Length: 332
Picture 1 (spheres, rainbow, N blue to C red):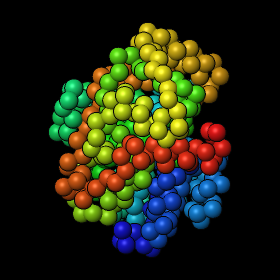
Picture 2: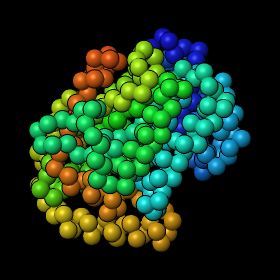
Picture 3: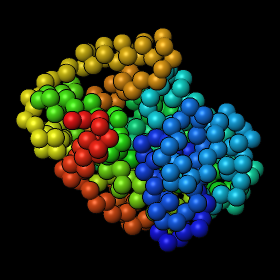
């Protein structure tokens, strides 16, 4: 990754889980990092890494122009799954991508690479025991997936004018990830929830996902490529439970959570989000994805074209994640 030394990279979503790990890696490789952040964001870690901050987010058009101008790389990693309303999925993904591309074409038309961090949800669930590949037709089942797909389509429309790449990870986990914290805590207390009838999914540890993004920045490859990235293993309910139980030192009992109960819980938290204006992770939309039986993806194309080589499987990744939770004081 020596090619990153001395280069300027703008990261959106830098104060988030994946974005924070990406910033740390970029700084470690000698890149000059810029971050577009909301004024309400916690920027303590970013400041500690010497990141140049552009506060105001996408609402501050002048700040966005300054952040983009002169950048060698842009990684659009904003647009997570926590929302107060369905419309927020599209505002955070499709609309921000459109605005960012417009500004790049005006302020940095010679950008070396634009990377959109999308999601396997944009492609939709896979067939059982048959990992999805990039040439399959997308069929997202949730508004989150549809919003990610809409962002991808905007990016690919510009592939003749900009070198663009889309990264599609499945579930990303690791230290600092709040979405899996509840599951780790539940298992630590002796309960392993099983969603619906259970299913099988691909996963990726955060450092491996970051490596894939960095490779997409520096390794030569055609513009307009979409890459699934994952550690290559299929994870069912039992394996996930065993890995986390070993990491937290527990012997949990499996407790089934039927689909109707999950949908009801999603409706309640969604209503809370709308009433308070506070983003929530568990919505009916999220439940729609959680109840799909198969989320397997193939990272073969990323391996062959980018040299992507994941290093951490869930058994080791769960240990590192639990240690990170303990260090942060999130789990005793």
